[in-house]
Amino acid sequence: MDRSDITIEEYLGTFIVAGQRHDVLIRSVPDTDGTWHNAVVFRRDGKLSAPHVVETGVDWHVPPGIALQRANEELGEKDCIELYRRALRPRPPLL
Image (cartoon, rainbow, N blue to C red; front, side, top):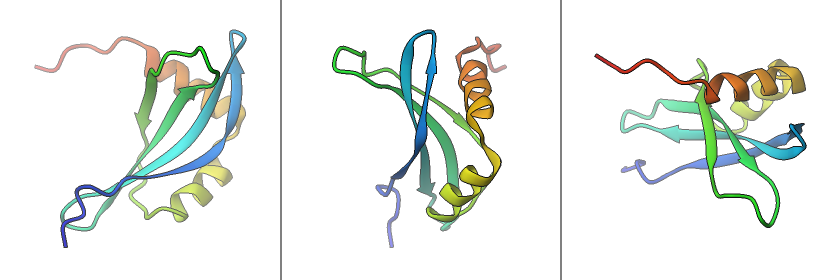
């Protein structure tokens, strides 16, 4: 079964940074071996917001539902804001 086109996003919550509201979602994507890969996705909320998405991976490899449950248990608002800020930092180039 080809699962490469399956992406599931589950709503976790919202937070406000610098006066801008962001929706937080947990993205789960399976690879061809059936291993799930999870990420935290941040989307600016609002009609005039740019469609820019910020995302960062997490070290979980669990199916949807379980990923959302784990995020609810482990990620508070402060944790989400810290992940968001970390995802915005410039990264050194890959060698």
